Length: 323
Image (cartoon, rainbow, N blue to C red):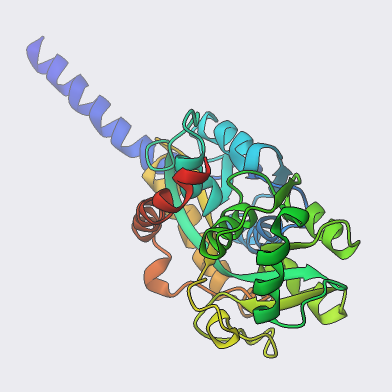
């Protein structure tokens, strides 16, 4: 009897060892939902659609984008953290949802490091200082002088507390020691529409959202907050060139799954994301929008986990006074 029980136990263990990889190999067997925590048309939405379109081909299943707005992206991120960890609900997060949210929301319902499995970094997105097309200042030096003299009369658009557009302008405002009126929207898409319509004065935004409007002349671009100019906007000076070297900001977009998602599923999704980023058509579309393609060493789940940790440490001292 003891021998039979031992044999049965061994067989059960072998069966489990066989079934688990088999289940991983069959993933996915149905469509995947990718939550985007902002309105359609914004940088996170655009990058998600470009990358997941290719990933869907690799995985053999559809990836449906679901835009969930509210609270600077934290509403959607909370929902993603609480989703079933079976690989069928993912989220495209960024510097706001997975770093700045920690100091800005003391009662945040999730923790970026504890409640998510990192999958892959999708793109870096430089930050631009933008304004409505008839905003008086002609260059960044004039912009700085103008907003310092008139800050209480001016308004700055953003996509909600904790969003990239909010966080990056908070950094700008802290450097300039000003407190303009903040005007929140349900995403940088709607915020950009308001800027184009002249309903708000200025904003800090990711380059993906701004290139078409800058090239069309519907808004002004004063500077890009990176050490070098961006090939998609060669005529826009860096903040260092334009006289404000202290303002350096680059956002990022990345893919996450709820905590506890199978390592095999994470590996499948990471491989599909990497394949998308290596595709010439995908790269061309992202580069045309001004995105920075992550280097191979930055595309692993481990690298993304390290990035989230470092970004929380970076933004916490900057944003705690604003919370």
